[in-house]
Image (cartoon, rainbow, N blue to C red; front, side):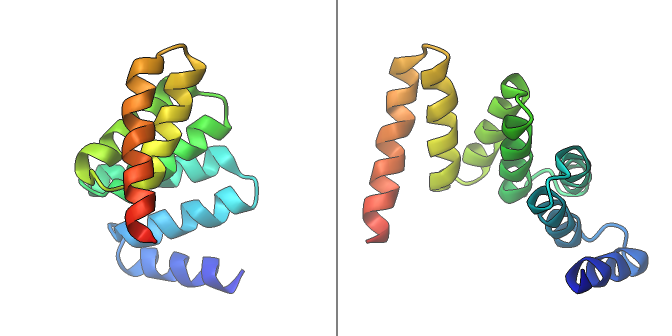
Length: 120
């Protein structure tokens, strides 16, 4: 609750503070307020369309809401902005595999494993 209030104070001073929007969105998501979280992530993307975490978090939230069609382009945007974003590769591979796009999914599974192995 205190973190949420601190981020709101930050936004009161600077409504264009990307990280504050992302952090509030994450708090909303953790509280199960997925539509509200998605709104904060969308604002953060509007402010800074080059922020891979904002795209990824929106993708996760949309995925959790069952909106796979709109989650996929957000995972792709996160990967385009940060090709080493392992979690984005993982989530995109999952969506592709579930939709019968195995060849494309395999590419992202491979990249995910490469990135995961390099972390060890």
